[in-house]
Amino acid sequence: MANYLGLDIGTTNIKAVLLNINQGKIIAKASKPTPYTIKEQDTAEHSPEQLYSSAAECIREVSAGFEVDGLGISSFAEAGLPINENGAPLFPVIAWFDNRSQAQVNQLLKKLPEEKIYQITGQKPGFSFGLFKYLWIKEKFPDVTSQMRWWLSVPDYILYRLTGEIFTDYTQASRTMVFDQEIKDWSDILMDYAEVSREQLPNTVPSGTIIGKITKKASIETGLPEGLPCAVGGHDHLCGAFACGGIESSMAVDSSGSSQALLFFRDQFNPEDKLMKMGYVQYVHVVSDQYVIKGGLKTAGKALEWLREQMNISSFDFKNLSTMNNPLKRPIWLPFFQGSGTPNREPFDRASLIGLTLNHSKSDIAVALMEGLAYWVRDNTDSIGKNTGKNIEKIIAIGGANQTSLIREIKSSVLNIPVISPEIPEPSAVGAALLASVGNGEFNSYLEAQQSLHFPAKVTEPNLQYYEMYSKIYERVYLISKTALFKIHTELHKLENKKEKE
Image (tube, rainbow, N blue to C red; front, side, top):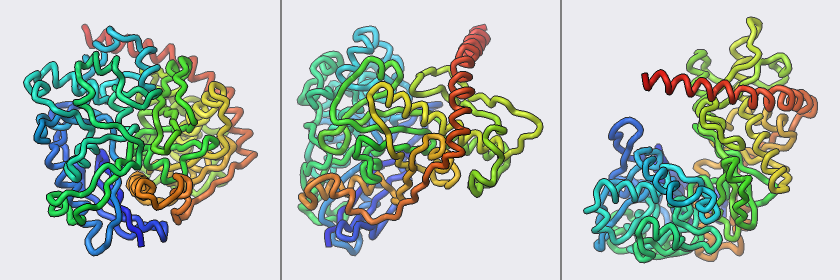
C-alpha cells in the first residue's frame, strides 16, 4: 500500500490526511486549531514555533500506526516570515488577512503602474501579499530585515523545519507579488524595488516537486521516518481544486466558503488589460503547465450565515426548487455585502434587496439570496466567456456554502450547466497528498492521479423551465439594477466619509 500524507495549513485549522493511493481513499485524519493572536482590530499574527508544533502534532496523530511513503503541504498563501542564517524566525508571521501594510501598497503604486505589476505578476496589489508584509517590517523594524537570510512563505518554513531545504512552489511564490509568471522565476524589477536579492528568496519549483527528506530531528518531532520524501504542494484553493477535478479548461471551480472564489483554467499566461480592469488575477496552477484565472466575492457563505441568524432560521437546507414559490415572484438580491467583486470590481457596492413586499416570507428572502449568489457566478462565467472565448460546460462546487442541495440546484439552473459536488473531506490536504505522489513517481500524470480518487460526487442537472425564468430575472433585473445602484452606493459612501470627517 502507498500512503501519502497531505498537510493543509488553514486559516482556522491545520488538517492532515493520510491518503491511500491504491484505494483512492482517506485512511486517517487529524486536525488542530491554527494558532494566532489578534493584536488589534484587523491585525493578527502567528507564532512560527506554534504553527510548526501544531503541524507536527497533526502529522504524528494522522501517521500513527501507518507506513507513510511521502508528504506534501497545502497552505493559505501570502503570509510569510524572515529567518536568519541559522533558520531562527526573526519576526512573527503576519496573517494573510492582516491589513497593516496598506501604506506599502500605495507606495508601490506610486513607483510602478498597476498595469506593469499585473503584466509581471498576474496579481492586483493588495495588503495580503508577502511583499508588502516584508516592506512593512523593513520600515518599522529595519534591524530585523538587516539580519534576514531568507524570506519564506508559511509552507516553505514548515518544509524547512522538516527537511532543512529552502524551496517554494510556483503558486505560493505567485502570492508574494515578487514572482514573474512568464518566466516562472523571481522578478528582477520587484526584487530591486524591495531591495531583496535572489539569494534571500527560496528556490522556485513546480508543485509536487520532491525537495528534500525528513531529517533526524524532524523525525523525532513528527514520528515520521527519517529520509521520508517531502514535496512542495501549493496554494490551498488550487490544491483543493486539483483534488476535485479542476484541471480541464471546460470546467470552472466554484469554491464557496465564507468568501467565494471562482477558478477558470488555461494553458498560458495572458495578462490581458481587460481582465485586470475587471479584477481577475492570473497565476500558475498546481497542475504543471496550467494557469488559473481567479475571480472572487468577499462575502458568500458569511452572508448566508448572517441572514440565517438575523431571521432565526435553523437551516437553509430547504427541500428543492419545486417546493418554493415561482422565482419570478421572489425579491432579488444583489449580494454585494463587501463590494461587488469580479467582474465589476466596485468596492463601494452594497447588498440590495429589490422588490420586497408584505407577501414575501422568510424562505423567499433566503432563497433569493442564494439566487443572487448564483447570478454573480453567471455574471463571471459570462464575462470570462466573452473575454477569453471559454465555454464552461460544468461547475465543480466545493466549500461549505455549496453543501446544501438547493443552492446547487439553483446554480445549475441559473447557469444551465451541470453542477458537480465531490464529497471529498479536506480536499486541499488530499490535493497536497496527490501532488506528493505525482512527484514521487506513483502516477504518469496529474489527471491519472486525480482520477485515482474514489469519492462519491453529487451531480445536479439544470432545470430548463427554471433556467428560462432565471434568465429573464438575470438579464432584465440583476444586470440592470447592478449598474443603476452602483451610483447610489457610491454616493452613500461619500456621505459616510463626509460625516466621519466632520
